[in-house]
Length: 61
Image (tube, rainbow, N blue to C red; front, side):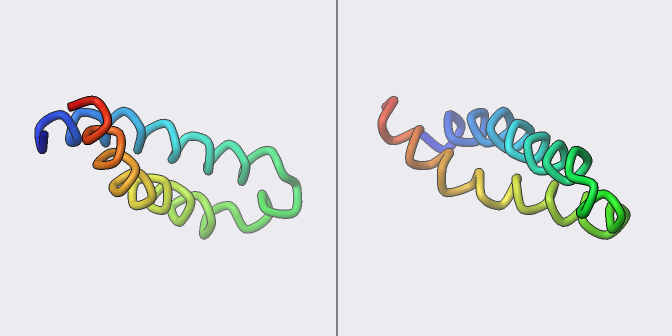
């Protein structure tokens, strides 16, 4: 199950990081602080994806 969760994490983390960066870039108020917020949004997407990938991996197995 760990390998399955790892594969899911790679895909889900990339997706959530992309969503976070898109939110920062598309919002003019957040875009002004983009150099600081874009890495935070990307890291947050990957961190949030960790427990989600284990939950999805359990449901698939």
